[in-house]
Image (tube, rainbow, N blue to C red; front, side):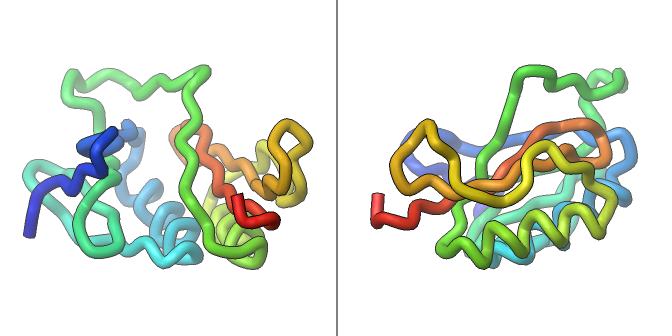
Length: 133
């Protein structure tokens, strides 16, 4: 298995976790609703996520300090509005907090999104476009 997948823009996204087990429970549920799987542990406490290859990683920060991400949002693609709804519901049920309920977003035509904070306070969202954009 490749360690990271890359997509021509990013090699991977890494988010710090205060408690990796608690964050993994959140991401297993929220990302699972989007078809993104927990691909298991790697190295010293990393948890890898992806569809076919790893692209998203959670772990305690390497410097041992608390994670910080104010002003950062990571968006996960959804295929349908139902997937966005499921991402939000699963994330809330697994320790996340609401940062924006599922629904249309007026800043982009056809945008439908939901926002959450994970257990470590990182902001994540899921987006789809209802008009094919």
